[in-house]
Amino acid sequence: MKDLKKYSTKDQETLQDIRLAQREHGFIIPSDYVYFLMNCNGFEFDEPPIIKLGIDEYEFGEFYDLQTLVWELAHYRKMVENYNHYFWLKDYLSVGNIDDHRIVIGTKPENINEVYLYNDEEGTTVKIADNIFVLLEMYI
Image (cartoon, rainbow, N blue to C red; front, side, top):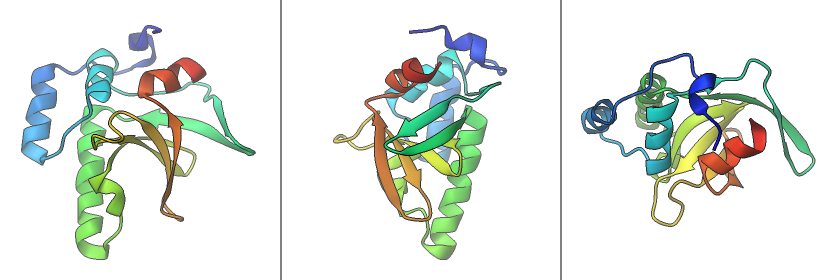
């Protein structure tokens, strides 16, 4: 695995900070993303790589840091309450974006740590990697 710290502009999170955020906001961060936050805490690419899925190409966006992850989750929960959007929250955690789509990571036993591309408009997911580290190895 490449050194993720060189891609991050933020300080890494401690396990204590991550556990506190999970308790305060009532969500579980899958183990691979906990490791990611402790070693990188999100990043954006200077020159985003292109991800090819079938015939489609997407520009890689970013992976969220812990603060953004918490903010995004609060936003999604409000959308669920008000408009019944983001039904996928029960199976996935949004951890970043690619173009206009979300990068989500599985949170259920059957999909834990698997990485998907979620299309808001269509409400569909496409698996893009077995875990975040496989995805990063492919593109950084």
